[in-house]
Length: 384
Image (cartoon, rainbow, N blue to C red; front, side, top):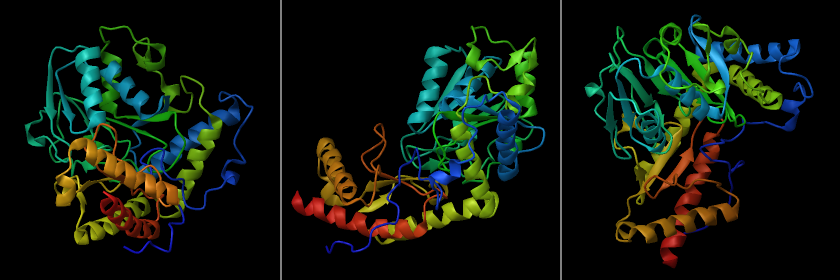
């Protein structure tokens, strides 16, 4: 196959940290509040502005709290698990590695007695209709390492008695989240908006706040997880008074991403770009003789972390080690050409590829990437 002549303008297709917004330069950080305390008046104003802008872009209800917390999405999820669970039984949903990690934390670390687990293989979803939302429920909206998302929230009752705790790190800003069905939502800056790592976002419904103020877990609570004092929510956490010291450089970068999102039509524009990116890959997959989606149905196929499997019979005839080696050669070849970085499948996932299609990636670059994918696969197959 002839080697493509044109390279993507940007070769960053990593699923986290993800590509910066189009046109980003260091100038975006020139107003960062460096050398100043995050507790200074301008520091708190900048943090609160980022929270207010988050609410505006995502359409978060006015009575939901939004907080900036430590340790990325992982830290935000752990805060929710350790602070909220144990008041009633919990249903844990898992269909990829991060969901499996939350199951491990609840079963082996918190050691809760009343836990039901609903697991599915990569590419599939568990039976959502079997979930009882009168119990607490923990799930990922979009499986970042499997490319499988929940298609909707119809399975969550509006009058539920339990809390829904949703890890939405690769869904927020790219998918419509039904806030009235979600009590806790977490994400990190380095996904759809291409922000920097280490900071997480924790969004709480009034029902989640009520749980925090009425329930005290049986286990010790580290300071970094504490959201109440004297039985009342620490409101400052949700106005920009962070528990620990945030990076004001990263905060400025997040604000820049939010303002860029605003400039392209807010959430509507972000979702449209991500869906258009998925269409580029869907059109290519439909005509490909060697690649397919890991997600088994179109309605569950992620429009951000797009996971691919190899469907070629030649590849299927290889053993697992040979398959992994073949894909390593393919991704290394693209990396060496400077046309695609970091597109190998997640380490726990089946052998395949993972391509980020969030709004900071351009459809034109994805179109060019598909030509390089075909070339690279043909090259490694011919050399085998």
